[in-house]
Amino acid sequence: MAAAVVRDRPVPLGHLLRLTTPSGLYEHALGATPRVANGMCVDDAARALVVVARMPGASTTVMLLAATYLEFLLDGQRAGGLMHNRRTAGRTWVDAPSADDHWGRALWAFGTAAARLGDDALAAAARQGAARALAARSGHPRAMAYAALGAAQLLRVRPDDAAALHLLHDARRVLPRPRPEASWPWPEARLSYANAVIPEAMVTVGTQLGDDGLQRDGLRLLRWLVEQQTAGGHLSLVPAGGRGPGDARPGFDQQPIEAAALAEAASTAFLATGDDAWRDVLDACVAWFEGDNDVHVPVRDAETGGGFDGLEPAGVNQNQGAESTLAWLACLQLSRALPGIAR
Image (cartoon, rainbow, N blue to C red; front, side, top):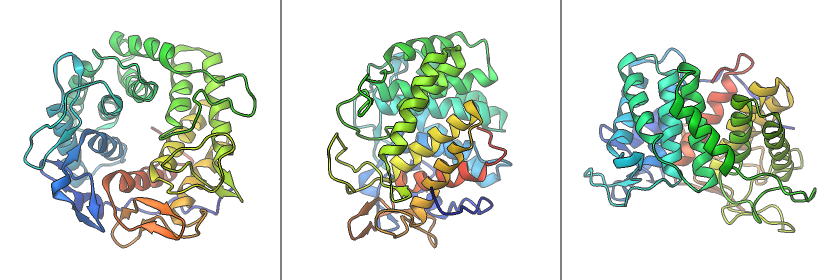
């Protein structure tokens, strides 16, 4: 499906360090230069905490990054587990707290940090953040999907965590099921963004709760999603405007978050099944960044360690924002974890 992937390459943190300050992580960049005026967001801090928490044998630098992102997330929490999302460089939150997708990503990050960080104090702080976040619920499937991933991580270290288990049961009720139509089983009329997190959560919740039917539905949707985003032996990702039945392909602009979501889901599916086909999907996600894509150009900057903000018909968006950079780093990280993959 994809070109051979070098699994022992280092995960480059140079651009992530450039985007990070002691107060947080800048969301956008002009080229490789942070756009300070655009501020910071919980979405990116959560993604960043997931990535650094999963780094084995974490260095002092990685621990400092983890502490920065964790502090940012904890600062955004409010009553009932709700979360702000957007904060200025001057540390002022500018939106109302809610349980939208950023809340789910924050819980994913809290759970991952609690399970994976080697620093006892940081792991304890992450557990406290998770405990507060677990009080909230969302009606948005993607928000609950991300939250379920975090709750499952918590259960790795605290199998008797009643609040985490309760969230998994609630997520099972919110996560959509496949449609009966074989040509379009996706539970929404159109594919939109971070699509693979929905089947990933179905697999995770099904595995955790012993719900074989939910796990099978998740794997079925994930296989279909991979097929929908594969052309000519490489990934042809859902564009920013989404994709519906009959839409022309390839579509642009393609977003790195879609490759990262597929990589995360493929890693989860491999853990659940041991099926080597999911390794191939993960390799294809890395290869998409390396240039095995519809335009045949890299979607990452090997010199800066940044990920480009999108694949366009004639090249790439040269800006290197946090979301795109973290998408590339996550794909590399998950690929490096093979064959002894551990999350």
